[in-house]
Image 1: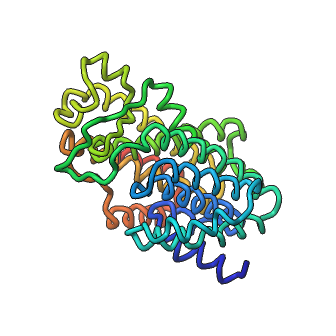
Image 2: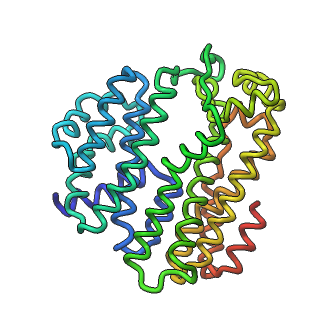
Length: 343
C-alpha cells in the first residue's frame, strides 16, 4: 500500500463520493481523519454494492457478505478483487465506479492501521453491514430504477417504529459511537462531558441524520417500492404505503413525528459539538447538524411537494455556514445561534 494510493483514497475518491462529510473530515486533525475517512469509504462501497439494482439480490447479498468478511479479516481478498469485474462496470456514476475499483486498496489501508483504530473501523463496519443486509433482504427485490412517472406496483414497509429505530442505529447511530471512541482515543481532554454522555449524544445525532435522509428520499423510495415509515403507524391512520405517495398530506402526522425525532437528533448533535474543546473538531462535528437543521426547514417548507423533488441545501448555503463558523471561531454560543436561525 503506497502513500499515493492512500492519498488518492482520502483525497479525490472521498471528495467525489461525499459532500458534507468530506468538508467535515478535512477540517479534522490527521490522526482522526484517517480512520474516519476509511470507515466512510468502506461503508459507502458496501452500500453501493447493496444498491446495484441491475444485479440480482442474491448476488448482491453474497458479494456484501464477501466484502464484509474481507473487512473483518475473516475472508481472503479474492472477493474484493472480483468486485472490480462484477460491480464497477455497472456503476453509471463515475465516482462510485472509481470507489469500487479502489476497494482492494481500501482493504490494504485498513490492514495498515494501528491495532486500535483497525478494531474500531471493523467494529463500526460490522454494524453498518448488518444494517445494509437487513435493508437488502427487506427491500432488495423492490424496483429501484423507477422514475417519478413509474411507480413500483408493490411497496414494502418496515413493520414497527422499533424496526426503524434499530435500522437507523445500525447504519448511522453506531457511527456516532465510533466517532466518539476515536476522538477520545486520539484527542486528550476531548470534551467537557463524559465519554458515556458523548456516546449517547453521538448515537442520537447519527440516527437523526439518517432520519433526515429517509425523510428527504421518501418520495423516491416509495416509487422504488420501499417505505421506511412503520406500517403499524400508517395503519393507525387507515393508510397503506402507496397512499403516502398518492396523497402525502394524509400522512402528515407520521411525517411530523419523524421530523421531530430528526430535529431532536440535530439538537443532540449541536450539544455534542458544543461540548468539544478543540475548535477544529467542534467545527467539523457541528457542520452536519447545521446542514441537517436547514434540510429539515426546507422539508417543512416544501410540504407534500418534497415527495416529487429532491430537497437539498445548496452549496452556496453550505459555504456560508462554513465561513460564518470560521469567522466566529466556531464558538459554542455562535454555533447554537446559527443552529436556531437555520432551524
